[in-house]
Length: 587
Image 1 (cartoon, rainbow, N blue to C red):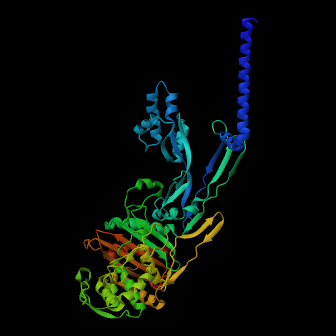
Image 2: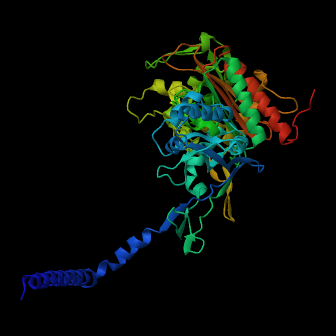
Image 3: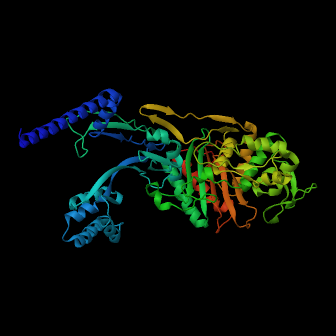
């Protein structure tokens, strides 16, 4: 056999052995996957399927918020974000890249005037696939950009929360931002926060076969679950009254040179909150512009509702509560008299109590104590008549020191009692005229609501109804408890009516019942006050409770003269708006 023939056979043998080895390897792999890894088949098939199957979360439309008259306070709109593709732009303009960047930045700036040309130029040089340069933009701006057809610039539509009335009731509503997980939205503060789960609804899903670019195939299979729309809320807020209260408060804070202010209007018989405003406030459509701005005293953020969060020493408005406790226990009558030399000393060493500027009033009745806003008279009642066991149960009944539960965040306020560490009789005497106790504006307004409502305190509420995709649930007024007797409430209303006349806080055709407050805080100068007026109208047949409070006014520091005019204006608007029948002849 020739050597050439042997070499040919050897080559054939090598090829044969290689083919056999390949067959053995393939059979081994087949045995491995089909027998040893038989349970992994589904996983492998799923991995293969995942390469051409797309699954997306479909966000649910957020529920709408209406006022008591059906006006929209919060809705949803679709607005465009503006993106550029710097990398693609550089590829498309290799020759005149720098000149084209400047030109495109200029054209963009002409439409997006709030974005500087320098910033746009920097964005064009970013080493990124896409850069968001603006958004949300107005529909007119979107139309302009589409008409220009700028290369490598595209619009991405997105759903945004929109508040048609701007800053109206902003601290009641709160605002909405993107959820932390990137899907859907999250309410922040106010109604948007407390009722976020209802408003947000439930997201759906969509699964479909896609092409190599990720676009769904029209002939491919698809499946999904529809999102559940968020529930719609109707509030007790009346936009007309809210506007008048809020705009009036802003003007009054400015005119008084105050740091901030709060105003609340409550329906006497139901506890429904008709208006609730704070100044300064913010526009929830542009909430980011207000970051770092402070609201009321005690709050580091303007977003917080001061009627619920910013507790303060109420001063002389608390004297009505002291009188209510004493009248209800029949310890005094409106005609009970004391001698008021302008100060009150105590034999047990309790610190002396003085009136404002040490003014004395001589012989005065309990009604005159309220008219004069005499600290001495209130302290005398607390020390000699009420004592701890006669005052503190009534402070609890009136709801002080407990949250109302209306919205979050909320400060409960507080006070020391004779069972508290560090309590002294000085706490008792000072609490009788609104020091050594902190309350929120809503708590104090609800205390006056109980007086106006014949001694019965209602549960305050701000959501009138919830419409959850056709299932409507309406809030019914709820009695919390009886605080004082009907006779006591009527007697005290008569005393407060005389206070209104004494302070000239009246409106034509209607009787009013009020108490002023000029509260000072220990450690601060006497001209650093919380000026307030709390009361109800009409006095004979109460319909609405109104509270107005100004923080640290500088041009006029007294409750009656600083907060009184706005209280009168709100009362007059309420009577007109709701066509309340006058209870007095008009001169």
